[in-house]
Image (tube, rainbow over all chains, first blue to last red; front, side, top):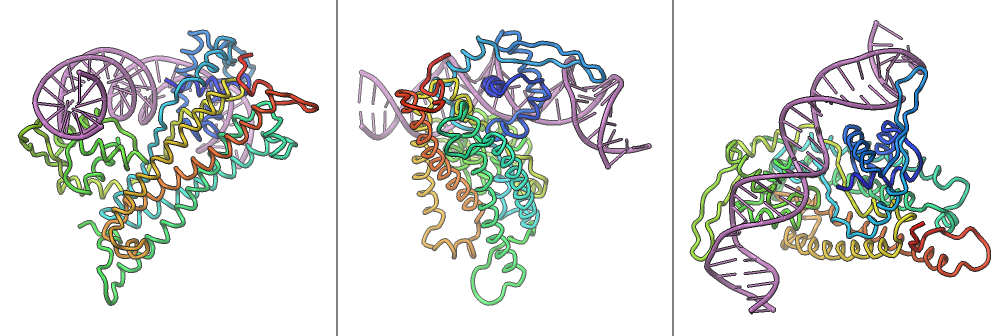
Length: 204
Length: 204
DNA sequence: ATACTCATGTAACAGGTTACATGATTTC
DNA sequence: GAAATCATGTAACCTGTTACATGAGTAT
């Protein structure tokens, strides 16, 4: 129900094709609303049918035709009304966390590798976010932009995306440290204690 | 596809009814995998049919019968194998962020109220997480638990949940500050500057 | 040569959401 | 007396995912 509004709010940035939106969703909106290109094309058809966006076909010379979409007046009003309604609680689906939850009966080495990949991903996202941030700010310093800018919404959600990925990195560092210590212990269980059972990845 | 494993990993904690799982998902697993009771009942039927969990019916005196579920040997092996596979990238769906993205054309007052609600929610989650944390630690200090505990997985995911909600609060405080300053400016646009247009919620 | 980008689309299926239903028990 | 808890279930609908298809142009 509110992929709809994610699309409308993305179109606040200006006219875009389905393909453009797919990229926008990939680099910035995905930060709070994930969607595949297929979902977007389906949604754009619906929004056009409902008159919330206007479509025009642009013929291109050496490329397939494309449809460019803009927010209609009705779409803008619908979006404004949406901001008033009570938001649904956020839904998070993170398979990595399911694997971490089960790390004690699973393959410790594999889970650690997954965490490292997640951290690489986070670093990549942060680099792209930083570029988006500079682009949004333009020539202004953050304080001026936030005080006087016309559209701060995208910047505020970007801030959340940045802190989310930073937190991923911090968490990942801590967890790797913990799991590595346990794996090392399990490899050579010297002396005392009830060492971590199964922490190195044995299946039974 | 991996609500399945979220359920299996929740059952690592021990036998539970569908109703129990609904509560567990509500208080801790929802932190990385949201699911409604209906999804859980459907999934439990499937997992039972596939032999990944064992069900037994417990007759109760003054309450409806309940089915209690436990991980089967096959289920545990499947879960272990799952930890090795490449996780899908996380998907986040946060309606509040869509509203924040559109705050500049929407109702500023309403959006600020939504952010405050989110912050209250975060405070509630943190209080519950803190209770879960103490429960997991038992008598041990964090360092001892992490070094020697048998099952650290749930603790590690809990840490992520805690930092997520703390980050929600920090972000909320910052954003409210920014939006309030803009709303105040728009209310009495004294002197210079290109004050924030529409920041107080006018529809045009 | 090969792969990637641009640009869209269909179809089938799996998964998630909402509404409704039942019915006794316990707590406020 | 009303509301919440325990404990499940059906059905309909909406969303999300995956696989596949097309076809020219550009970059390596």
